[in-house]
Amino acid sequence: MPRRKPITKLGIFGKYDLNPEQAVENYFESKVNNKYYVNVPGWDVARNGFELKGIHNDREYMEITKEQHRMREQAQRQVVVNRKRLEQTTDLLQRMRAEFVELNDFLKDCEMKEQNALDTVKREKEKHEQYGQKITQLEADLEKLDEFVVKYEETINAFEPFEKVMEQTIAESKSYENMQELIQRCDSLLLAQVEISAVEQQKIQEIEEIRQNLFKATKTALHIITGLNNDLSELLTQYVAAKEEGLRWEKSVTVVKCYMVENESSINCLLDAINHVYILLRKRRGSAPVAPRGDVETQLDHIKEEIEILHDVRKQAAAKLRNDGHSLCAEKGTERRKTAL
Image 1 (cartoon, one colour):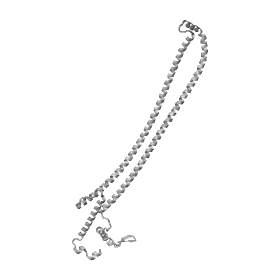
Image 2 (cartoon, one colour; image 1 turned 90 degrees about the horizontal axis):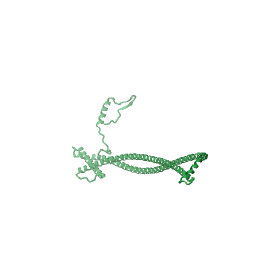
Image 3 (tube, rainbow, N blue to C red; image 1 turned 180 degrees about the vertical axis):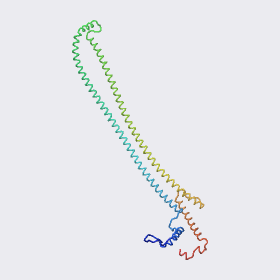
Image 4 (cartoon, rainbow, N blue to C red; image 1 turned 45 degrees about the vertical axis):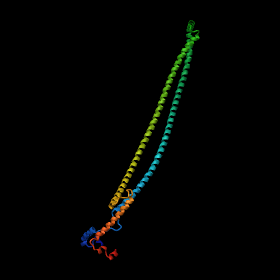
């Protein structure tokens, strides 16, 4: 039996035994009592059995069901949020693409206008230089003409004898009637030579303009190719970002799917266990199973009833074993004993 009175008391030097000569005996007696003493459980203490396991399984099933509903609602809310984010991202991407195209076109127009303005300024400067050169050339030509007039007069005086030769030539020649025709023929030859020189200069100028136009077209094409390369780089960057975002979403969906599959497998194992116990109990009764696999409530009710019946049988068998070998009077008990009970 457990101790009821203390065996030590507090003194000056600490705790010490009341009966030192019995300390060893009480120690071993206490150990024996603790070893062979049976603690009878109370009537309201739950015992380990199928009923308690069924209650625990039912609670776990309810908790898992609530968690599943919560996760499903959370997943649906997340799907709506993700769809809204995707739509917002798509709208933002379209606006940014439109703004980028508009800004790119504006920059290209500005660049082309700047290039046209620079070309115009360059041409005007070239024309100004050409006009200055022409003015300088005209002034030099005027000076030369003045000198030429002086020299021409001197030449006329010097070549006056040749005039006589020309007159003699006209008189002897049948092609020319007078001096004017001879001079006109010479002038026409000189003018033809001047026109040939002018046409040559014009063709050279046209060739130079064609070369400048080709250079301008090549530069414009280079700008267009550069813009297209920039657009391609931007699209490639957006594609890589979209691919990474898709991979992140795919990973999240995979984790959620694995969690749902594990929960579903646990629930299926629990349903299979309940169904197996139900089938065993129905076979024990010698009847075929009636409730399908999904009807968990009916199966658990039947299992509970069978376990209660088995529990009653166990109680009656224990009582029978406890009263085995007693007389009928001792087995039934006296009237006084029944009253006391």
